[in-house]
Length: 237
View 1 (cartoon, rainbow, N blue to C red):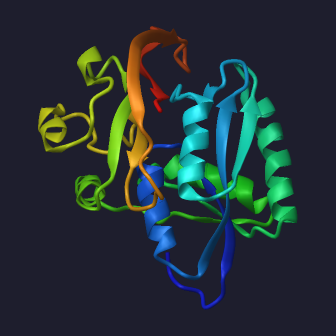
View 2 (view 1 turned 180 degrees about the vertical axis):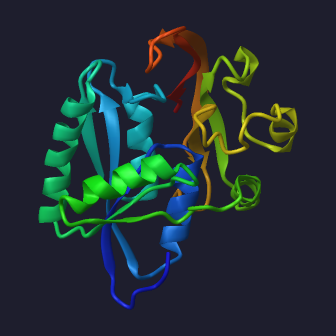
View 3 (view 1 turned 90 degrees about the vertical axis):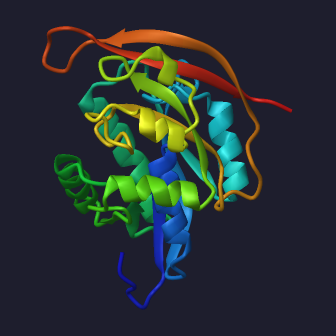
């Protein structure tokens, strides 16, 4: 992300996980980037972050600790792509009206996803910023830990990692235990995380682990369902 000489008013696509947190950290080091809003998709039926399954109350706690206003995209239980894009377009229209010109993402190397994002942004006159793009994921996760971030696995692909990984804190032992076919940042969807402490937060978010839940979802192209372990967590006093 190169300096432009002018302040870039933007919204940040916040997942609550480590890649978002590290990307936000780098954005905050650049005085030319003004982050006006966080944007997160929430399952309206369950009150949880879409895909990751983290409670909305924890998302609110992150936004408060970050000191950045949160805009939530409330989605129905099982939206199709057309419905999702329609709802997102309405939200982005509001953000453009608020003079946002850029959208920021924590993507690292998924070319198709970046292309899709940039094409959709262009239809509304926006540009995308990708602070972590093409960086080595082993280096990224080490930087994340060295900066003092703390994060927990809240969603695990059961075809790649067993249930014992759900709820684990990412540290050196965790990285040593990862199978060779699993990206250390989970960039291929192997796992998702919730960040509860680090240099971007005004204070840590106290969390407690509850039950681990297994759920299956239809495969995109048919065939065997895809299974995930979800570590339920909640804030504690």
